[in-house]
Length: 69
Image 1 (cartoon, rainbow, N blue to C red):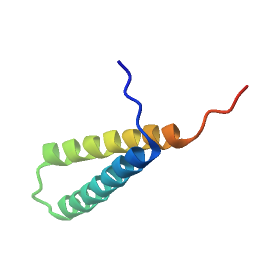
Image 2 (image 1 turned 90 degrees about the horizontal axis):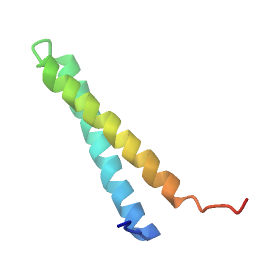
Image 3 (image 1 turned 90 degrees about the vertical axis):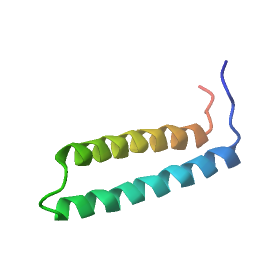
């Protein structure tokens, strides 16, 4: 079953994902500055950040109306 989201819901989800993406960016930066940081944790944060970026891109493309061919 496909769930159709309205533009307001997509915009809300985009805002949430962008906020989490920025938070992860800050956390990754802090870990990079710490020479004793956990490399595995850092890799997981980076992987999560990339996943969020993909989700954001998909939602942004969902906001673009389909044009007739």
